[in-house]
Image 1 (cartoon, rainbow, N blue to C red):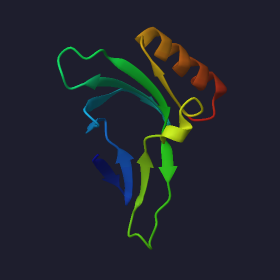
Image 2 (cartoon, one colour; image 1 turned 45 degrees about the horizontal axis):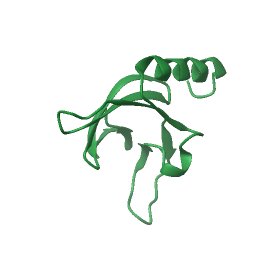
Image 3 (cartoon, rainbow, N blue to C red; image 1 turned 180 degrees about the horizontal axis):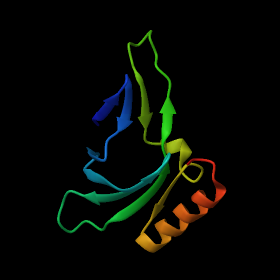
Length: 103
């Protein structure tokens, strides 16, 4: 996974590959983002992931800059959700925006 660097802070990539899937950011507002997740084979069924982007502090001991990160698997259902339809994903985004916490 690659990042854009802004003032020593790494921003989460808008397109990346992980575990045989391509992730493409379709929307972002504040820390709320929507990614299209599609397998790299042509018959793959698309999924939509609504996430609250994590902010990870710099770790000088490990020589790592501050960065944004995709939620961990432990965060699923709390800070990340997977949907089969874009409409359902957009509804979740609307709920998160109405809460006003992550914008």
